[in-house]
Structures are given as structure tokens and as C-alpha cells.
Image (cartoon, rainbow, N blue to C red; front, side, top):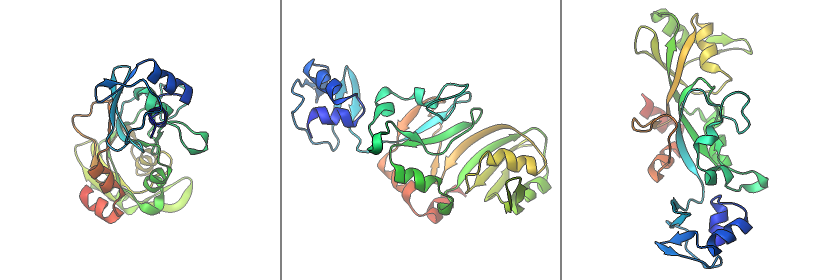
Length: 250
């Protein structure tokens, strides 16, 4: 693939901008400055620099982000800063089919919710992770306003009725971690589901943190606001049958 096309595919700007970056000597491949935008390179494993910043070619972008509180999972936030501002410009500008640009959050977390957020430009991956049919387990650490007893946990496991659906909604797993702290596993993705379930069971959410999606736990060394690429093994595990993924969450 020509270098100008590689830069364009990775989100470094329009084709004209990418041509200019190369011609002006702002791009290095293997430590050597390349000034011919039409020079061909193999994409697989290609590492390069643009204006002194290292980058590696990814045909598709798959990453995890530790969402901090006070951010919105929207490209057009209403009140708080967007989580997308935590990403470098190329990830926000990657071209997609249909004219869309940039990676998208796989589901959303409320502005006051922290924790693991997946982001990608792969629409099929987003659908698989979000679809209720696939039952991808998501684990939340929930801080409640009031202390709770075993009956409260039993209600969440047996199922509570939310105001928009007469069918009970059940937690896949629920474990006490402290007097006002519990671990809650869900396999659905209803609007404000954790907060509404806790309220229906007779309590209130004071703090909410997502610590795991399927087999992927939020790394301890990934600080709030930081992101990293998903490696091949992690991506394969997320794509594995749900039963295998659910086993690892137990």
C-alpha cells in the first residue's frame, strides 16, 4: 500500500494532508525519512513515525480505555467532556465506510460511572458485544447508599421489575464485597440498568465502576483516562463463545 494511503487509513488527515506530511519530511519508516507519498510498504506490523510520534499500523482499531468520572461517552457531549478527547487525533479521525470517522464506544457508561470501556471502528464487533442475544457478561462494582442484607442480594438474583418491562430482570451473579459494596454481573444492556435494578431492590447507587467485560478485566496499571490497544489474544478471547467468556468471570 502506498504510504499516503497508509496514513489516510490510520486517521492522519485527508489524502492531501497525508501527501503533504510525507513530502515535507514529517514521516519516518524504520527510522528513515520517506518523502515519496507513493512508495509502497507492507502494512502488516508496519511501524512508523509522524511528526516524531510513533505509530503502528492497525487495519482495525480495538482498544480499551479506563473511563474517568465526569466524562460522557458521546462525540457531542452536553455537559461534560467527551471520552473521545482522551484519544489521539488519528483514532478520532480514522475513516470508516459510509462517511463515518473515528472509533466508537462499545456501549455507554454514564458520566459518573468509571471503568472499562471498549472502543473500535469495527461495526460487527460493536454489535456482538452489545447485542442481548450474545449475553456478554459485564461486571460492575456497586457502592450503595445504604447497607444491605442477603435478602437484597437475593432480590437481584431472583429478578426485579423495571418500569419499562413487565418481565423480571435478573443479575447473572451478585457478591457482597463490603457493607455497602457489591459485585454485580449483568448480561443485558438496558438503559441505566444497574441503577434501576438497585433502586427496584430497595437501595440506591452512590458509586458505579465497571471492572470486567467478558474475559477482559480492567488492568490494574491502566489509570483513569489512559487507553491501550487490545492484543490479539485478548481480542480472540472477547470474540470466543459467550459460555467460555462467562466461565472466566466466575
